[in-house]
Image 1: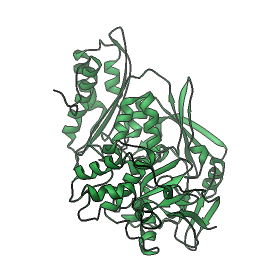
Image 2: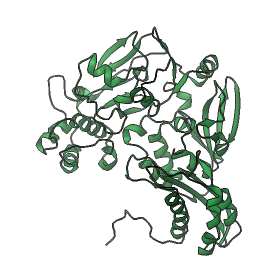
Image 3: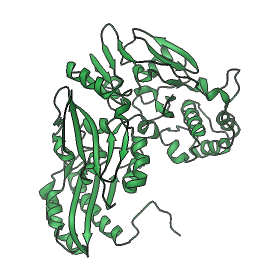
Image 4: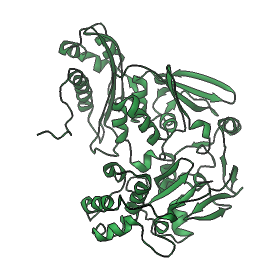
Amino acid sequence: MDISFLLNGERVELRGVSPTRTALDWLREERGLTGTKEGCNEGDCGACTVMVSDARGSRAVNACILFLPQLHGKALRTVEGISGPGGEMHPVQEAMVSHHGSQCGFCTPGFVVSMANAHLRGDTDYDDALSGNLCRCTGYAPIVRAAEAAAEAPVPGWMDEGALPEVAGTVSSRDMTAHVPDSADELAELAARHPNATLVAGATDVGLWVTKQLRDLPEVIFLNRCRDLQEIEVTDEAIRIGAGVTMDRVLDLMRVHFPSYAEMLRRYGSGQVRAAATIGGNIANGSPIGDNPPVLIALGARLHLRYRDTRREMAMEHFFLDYGKQDRYPGEFVETIEIPRQPDRLRVYKLSKRFDQDISAVCGAFNIQVEDGTVTGARIAFGGMAGIPKRAEAVEAALVGKPWNDEAVVAAWDGWEADFQPMSDMRASSEYRLLAARNMLTRYLLEDLGAATNVREVRP
């Protein structure tokens, strides 16, 4: 079956392309749309930013780690399509000119696309909207001024994508096969028949296997059209999140239920990455420095896995067995994440060298229950402290039953070394990681007692 999508308002049908060919390479090499630039080729710099639209609306994503089958049934708009059919400039383009927002021009197309996407969505938080676009020479101030100047202008009519292509089915090529199921039921059957296939959700990790490691993926199953994996259900008992829910939607959800989790997610990649990455993909890849698993472990989340019609569930912390090894059988996939409803006692602390879009040296999640001044329960989990996301069980045991004060934090001191023997690497030494983890518990206590601990907050 053809890959079918809209490109700058015109329908495109592709046949015989490699399923792991990136949108960036195809746009530049086959269509001559060279406004979309190749910078880092790993989803960090934003020079390749394009707009993708579907039933969910529009979002800015990185074309360098976007595979062509992920566009099936969607609309793609490049910087060339931000301008009108007769060359009429979009309001953000006019503002970039009048506010001197462009210098060398290499990064400018990506900025323009991100700005046009924010303009279409009515998003005026430019610190977040532009955090995934790196400026190499002009400086951000004139770019932000341009975005602000264009904010009140009406959205041009040519930005309306109209009807999207009606598509479904499997995409194949001579040397690879890519499957694009429309439902979790189809996915379950395909995954069972092809247990060695690579499952691709947002490709924010798998994309680098291709662009940086130059790996061949003989068989791929794309999950992005499985609508039933993209559902969120909130009941009195639990918050159930489909594995295909993207991290931008998880961020919006957690702003309501667990604001500290949401604040961490604001630093989780860029807007472009959050619009593509999924919560299930982040869990299933088993990274020891993934930021989601420690939080979900601290919240007591349970993981639901599926093989054909057989389902099983487990506590999140039991999914991670060893470095690079998870409790997932061939042909089995993550279907749902379930978080029990509870009072918000969660605090999440992400420590990284760069505030935005950086890999954590340490990410700590603390969920401590206190009644009448005494610790009655504790769930504490970390990323970056072991070969897997891991609970601090000795620390938890040292806290429970103790008065919630400085003495309790000191009493738990020895528990840290019992729980963790972190490695030293380019991000932090073992000693630094242990000290940081201990200090995070102290910060939790201070915040709980009403102390000001936000070092980024500007105070008179």
